[in-house]
Each structure stands twice: as C-alpha cells, then as structure tokens.
Amino acid sequence: VYDSDEFQRIEKTLDIIVKIRNALDNSFFMLFAQPIKGFIDEKPFYEILVRMIESENLLLPPGVFIPAAERYQLIQEIDKWVVKNTFEFIRNQQNVRDCKFSINLSGKSINQEMVGFILLESYDIKKSNILFEITETASVQNFSTSNQFITILTDAGFNFGLDDFGSGMSSFGYLKQMSVDYVKIDGAFVRGIVNDQLDCQIVKAICKILQKMDKKIIAEFVESEEIYEACKKIGVHYVQGYYIGKPLPLT
Ligand code: C2E
Ligand code: MG
Ligand code: MG
Image (cartoon, protein in one colour):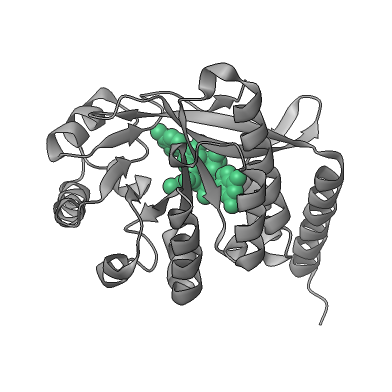
C-alpha cells in the first residue's frame, strides 16, 4: 500500500546511507573532543565525538547518521575510522601523550574483529590512557560477548566505561558482573539535578551504589555552575558538559 510518508522516510534513509558510504570512502569525517574534568585525577581527559562532513561548512552531528549506520551495518567502519584517527592523532602530537581519551563504541562494533583491529592499531599507544565507552543498552543486549570483548582489551591495558547509565535497560545486576572501571550517568538525570527532586535522588542513589562498587563515576550534561557544585557534593569523580567545555575540533 503506497504511503507517501513512509516513502519519504525511506528516501531520507537512503540519502543518508549514500552520504555515509561516500564519507567512509573519502574520509569525510571529523573528530571533535570535549573536556572531562576530574576532581581527584587532574590528568587532561577528553571524549572523542565524531561528525560527518556534509559540505565545506556543514557538519552533521552523530544523531543524524549513527542510527542509520547502526541499522545498515556501517557503524563498525565508522568506529574503526574514529579509533584509527584518534590513535594517529595521539601518535603525531607529542603534547597529548599524557592525556586521557575516551572513544565511543557502538554495541554493533563489539566483536572479535574489532578486538583485533584495536590491538593492531594501538601498537605504540599508552593503553591506560584510553577509555572505551559502550552504551549500556548495547552492552546489556549482548552481555556475554561484550564481557569477553571487555576482558581481552582490559587485559591489554585499556579502560572501559558504560555510557548513559540509568536510561534504557539499566541494571545493577549486569553492572555487578561487568568488568568496567567507569560509569557515566545519563545526562538526562544530571541536567535535572538542581531543579528536579526526583532526578537529584536518582543521581544520588546511583552514585551511592557505584561508590560501593568502586566504580569511577562521570556525570555528563553538566551545564551550569549549580549542577557542577551539586555533582561535586554528591561525590561524582568526573564532570563533563557545556559548563566545563563544549566539544571542539580535535587539533
Ligand atoms: P554520548 O557519548 O553520550 O556523548 C554526549 C553527547 O552530549 C554529545 O553529543 C555531546 O556533544 C553532548 N553534550 C555534551 N555536553 C552537553 C551538555 O552540557 N548539554 C547537552 N545538552 N549536551 C551535551 P554528540 O556529539 O551529538 O553525540 C551524540 C552521541 O553520538 C554520543 O552520545 C554517542 O553515543 C554517539 N557518538 C559520538 N561519536 C561517536 C563515535 O565515534 N562512535 C559511536 N559509535 N558513537 C558516537
Ligand atoms: Mg559517550
Ligand atoms: Mg552519554
């Protein structure tokens, strides 16, 4: 049955897939970095965020192309591009040798092939300075595969974190069995910490348990001084958000 809305949606998706393919073939991606401030650990720390170059002065945010890339099996190629180019950047810039970087990995990139790729590309990279962020939902969906993936790369020296914790399929039960060192609390709760009593209690409860589990806690979406102070008081270890610094081109 012809449905004009559906037809438009398909056309839009096809258009984005063609753009991603083209970007992968021509390296039309760009890396941004957003600072993460540690309250105890003062080592410079940045999260790598990818953008797709649509034209000379138009960059597409990941929200526009990552869902389609995940659905049409292109995400692993994007994640590889990001890993390779981040390592290359670290290799070429003497002054970032001692910085920590976190790199996002899609649940679809958590497999044996990616383990090999990361180990090969990181031959002269200080692995303890790299943190891989896996979205919690993605890791929970393939629990045994992701745990194996995490174990091999942790043994090689890398760090792991769960991203967006608290949303989606959150489970402390899984977290208990998962060998991740860092947990990033979902920004949706953090940004409400000052004005929404419930958000505040949720963040406090999550932190209390994470502290007992000896996890390093990162709060994202720290957008104001009030949120920053509240996070510090609650005992979060790292803060990230527009108040600390916006994502900027990695140079
Ligand atoms: P994420 O990993 O949770 O990254 C945080 C997102 O929140 C980023 O959006 C960042 O720009 C934005 N943000 C940071 N501080 C604030 C704040 O104070 N307020 C608000 N409202 N937003 C803030 P971005 O760059 O659009 O990335 C969106 C998502 O795309 C990321 O969420 C991550 O899941 C995914 N992503 C980004 N780069 C990659 C990548 O290289 N590979 C994969 N697989 N996913 C990526
Ligand atoms: Mg992230
Ligand atoms: Mg996040």
